[in-house]
Length: 86
Ligand code: SF4
Ligand code: SF4
View (tube, rainbow, N blue to C red):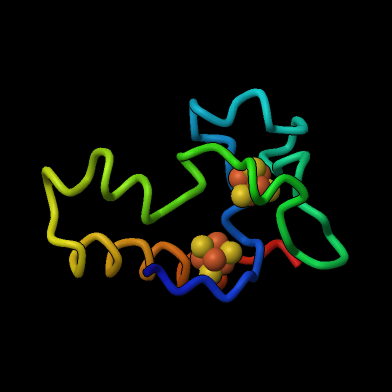
């Protein structure tokens, strides 16, 4: 299972994600991100694109091993944290 520390950074950078265009409050930040807790307000019902494990099973298993896919995601998390807007 993908290990997310709940930093919320990915939810502040959704401007380039087509599947989340209706979630963008206009500045690339998801309208469902709770800034106090840094958690998703619709966590149980969040779309698949927000679920690393589901996206792997549905699509990316055809292209990557799970280890490779998680590694790519961990690297993306690291970049987002380094470029944090806060
Ligand atoms: S950037 Fe990575 S660690 Fe932070 S909330 Fe998103 S998936 Fe989790
Ligand atoms: S729906 Fe939830 S998990 Fe997905 S980007 Fe928005 S706040 Fe993040």
